Structure formats: C-alpha cells, structure tokens
Image (cartoon, rainbow, N blue to C red; front, side):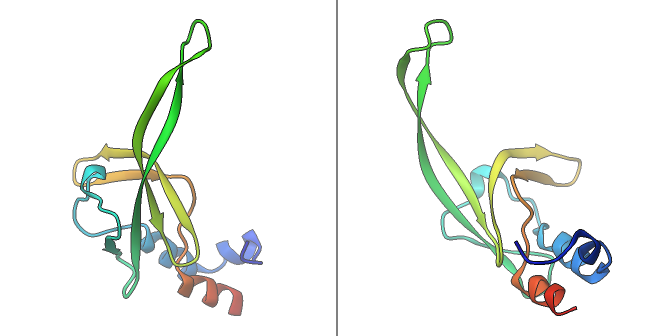
Amino acid sequence: NFNVTAEQVLGNTKFLQDVLKYHVVGGVKAFGDLTDGEELPTLLEGESLGVQIEEVTATAYSPIFRVAIGTTTSERANILGGATNATIMQGNVWTCNAVVQIIDTVLVPSSAVTEATEN
C-alpha cells in the first residue's frame, strides 16, 4: 500500500512510464537462465531487479482417491523489486522478439513510489 489513489496513479504519466520500463529487461532471458542472486538491469535507467530462486516441495495427491501419493520438488523464481516483489507464475511465454515471464504482482521501483507520494 503506497497511500495513493487510482486517480493519482493514472494522472501521473511519469509514474506509469517508470513502472512499465521497470518491467522490461534488455535482451531475451528465459526462465531456466535465471540464477539466484542475479541482478537484471531494466529499461528504467539506474534500476535493476533481483532474482531469488528457491526450491519448493509440494504434496502430490491421487486424483481419484484424494490421498497423498508422494511429493514433487520444483524451483520458484521470485523477482525482487525496489518497493515490491513478485513471483513468476508462468515462465517462458515466447513472442516473436522476446520472452515474457508472467508475474503475480506489479513491480514498483522505489524511485517511482517516492515521486508519486510527493506529487
């Protein structure tokens, strides 16, 4: 919660531009190429995003009997932003000139929050 209204956000073109640029990393970065502790420079000058990879274990259930039949382990990638963090929910949505990582929240750079709350 940044204590700003939707009207303030939508009325602040610079804030919106900064947030959008903060979501774009130059080059193509596939999900499998992300490494723990990595810094990803964004198109927002002077800002980067951090990467945190963690192992997640989940219980697998039988679809018929609904009893536990084992566990599965996978990697989860979290994107660490200045004011907010996000988890990659779906990796590697390929387009003609890029790859998109679908995240669960809007990443907001600290500089944009400071500017938005001052205006």
